[in-house]
Image 1 (cartoon, rainbow, N blue to C red):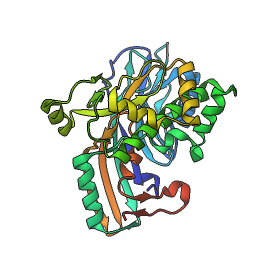
Image 2: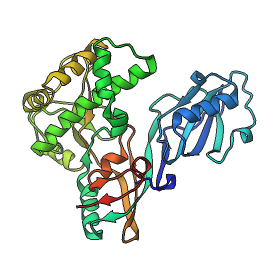
Image 3: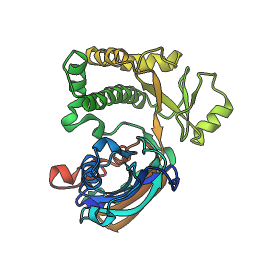
Length: 335
């Protein structure tokens, strides 16, 4: 994947319309080969404001073509020349005034168009796996982006919890990595047991497209029908202080998965940091998944995902995927 930035396109799905008035200028920006943090620097320099005056709903990869919104706090309601912000790598697609700074997470999801090149394994294999993904979904892992280069953020989180000082912005990133690592361990256990898309006794359910949870409660035909229809999903813990909401077999599985020295250090550190127990769906079904072949070894995928979910989580179910942006060459083995 990502043989060129155009092979990995991401469009944010807006969660709201601009109010049309206020002190925050909403910018819809397309950028190429530029991560979100660098775009924030460019916008702040253009507007003559501090980076803290810039808001964005999500973070986007550098090796991609991405469309996302930013907000710029301009108390005098005077916008600089939009043309002065334009470049080959950054284009302003739209702008409007809004009443509030754009907060993190304020998006309905992301739409992806991905091109895989050098596909080895044949169309029949790929088509069968994609049909299975469309029908059954995939385990909802946190992607490798959460864990930093070489997965080093988990070790950094352990060191931070042991007293190593870090910058404020890095602390937030390491807390997220620690939580994600523990969740992925639980999901690994459920995948190994074959229960990542099924109910265990004591299950906590998450409503599709929502952070709302309910249960545990006895399994019924109605709950099974809702599970089969992807209206609800089994969930796993985002660790923090407080009691696990799960009980019975579900709790036992979660606690077994989170044994060991590193997991205990991460659990203790997250509790002492004041994070609260939360939940995340164990499974994910891409919305409107479609695919077409450009040639015998080039495959195009299009789909949408909710906020906080990863395209690489979908791709891993196809087979071994090489990131050409990091490896210098790309192949997607489907065997």
